[in-house]
Image (cartoon, rainbow, N blue to C red):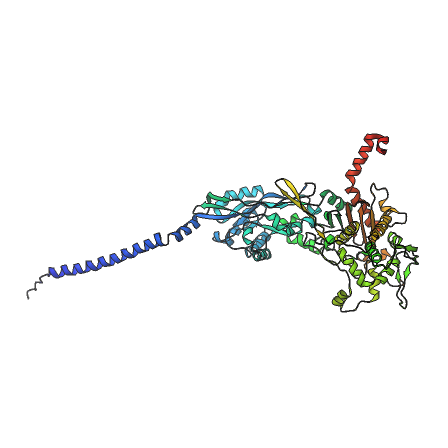
Length: 635
């Protein structure tokens, strides 16, 4: 067997190898330490402010705080729109791991309906995922307690307390106040366009109609902010800083809610409206449209069933008949047309004619009939207004012509918006040659002119426009713009707005005002006046004009028989008037759909409104008479 070779180790070489390896390792470690230190420097020094901000963003949150919406009062200080506390169940989508599972558990826990779940998903599409979305708007106390006991199971879900709008008078003021409702996508777009989105960061509701919408900027207020520290679960530990919101402005209206309630009772069973103005300022004392509806239904989200019932109702409760209802003004405008004829010199106070109950032009076969089949005999302009003689005004319309009628009626506000502080308003139609050409591509015929003389044909007006026109007439040309808002409450003091005006109407002969107003006095107070029966025995002296608006044409040889006419085609009852006669304080316009004659049906309602308006003064006089005795009361 051969001998094994003995290997002698080279310790020097091994030492050198080890040294080289250790040196390389040290270089690597040094490089790594350099990189680590550089990275630490970059994170701790260079990017300190950036990461500090991010850290604070996780630890500190800035939350918007919604302002309290301003309250609304009537002219006597009665609260019409208030804020009530409610609890809502809200979900922040980005803080929920499994949204569908969470909703299913909540639905079982709180008996949430499928419709509420569907509404939640609909609202979810309109909101950003970091913003809370309401699942149930009004939680009962027992529901709040149940959820509070189980809240630890639902990350991203919370019960929030907030103030919500409430209208204590319900349907009495719906078409005046309007209502607030949830902000939708369309609202958000408008807010973004107006650069107001930030001011609504914590606001759930916005004005949708009426005063709530028109004066939204005043009522909403300015958003506030609170800076809070939160823990790892997002719960607030403490408040670091608080910038309080500025509450909305408290608004006072010209409306008298007691008068409004009286009108609601008077219109029971009717479709129609009543407008009452203060001719001294243009203040809207009452504005009621019947039938109405409860605006509180819309505040928390009206159900599809309830909304469909309102939408499909043949009585159209969603329409504000006072400002959107367009009716033929009928004989209510005869005083205004008489004024136009007097001022144009077409007629004089002494102009008279024989009325045989019919009017016919030469070489024209058509006959226009008076409402009185046998006519009114000899009439002048005063008697023609008092007895509402159609024949006289057929002839006046023929003499004036459509151009002069349009020119004279436009300054009274016909065919234009009144300027009231409501968005829900129609402008009606004051017919003209140009209008007919644009509307029907037809010329204007003389046969179109004649019925305009009694407020028929293409002429339409809203009850508000009629009230405004009579207010101008009672003021002898002074034109105040109707306003619902009276002023604001600042430091517990009511600051009343200045009345808004338009240029006054100036006549060629100012005495013509007296002629027309005297005829309106006669309509109410003289023996043959059309409204005399309705106003007998009042403690005040008023003036007015009745109207009966025909809704369809009757053949030459036909007679109007109400009982044989479909209900929706029956005449509208109209009345306009003011009181006191010598110093007007209130103007009233009444429009009743398919109710029949204005003197019989509309005038008594106007009388009831005026009686209530003057009630306090009448009671005072009666009390004084009782206390002082007969002798003192005479003096």
